Image (tube, rainbow, N blue to C red; front, side, top):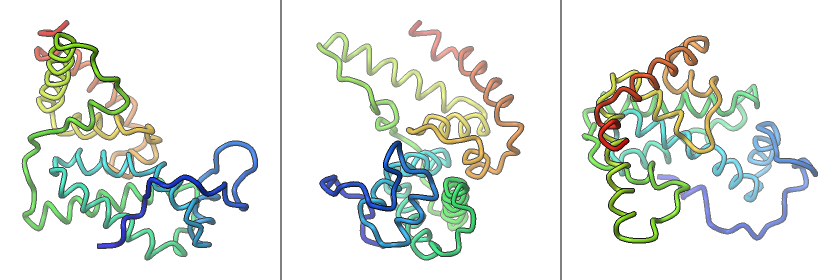
Length: 205
């Protein structure tokens, strides 16, 4: 397995090939990665790791297997840095690669049942102040988890990927799930309506 791509270090200044103002776009990130710039590579991983992780969990892989899929996906990018022809399609390239690796793992018979997904619901949320709030918070997360898992498989996968942080583009979602680009919006609306009607959610409203 490749050395972990992301680190916690953020001391380096922005690479000289990045834009002076605003966040770097995919072309900047790809150019920096090709040049071997570590700071740029970390920015690239920060931007797309959430999408890759969401794709793996959307295929109902457990945490360890999802981590393996993520690492293999980054390894594939390292191996094919010079062959990514459209920098603006980098997110879609990573999504497609992650999806193919998920399908390979499942086909190989290493699929595990999803039993816990606390990371999804804890992301970006402050901890409750007291025991009563903690119980309510936990109940709501559990209800949302059950509601998602009760959805049809297509809805489950779509909403899981859309919950990634940062939220993926529709092009990336299309590549991740093999869905036509024009169908994502309508299907998303139907899936959200189905989620709102879930008895699991009505119990805590």
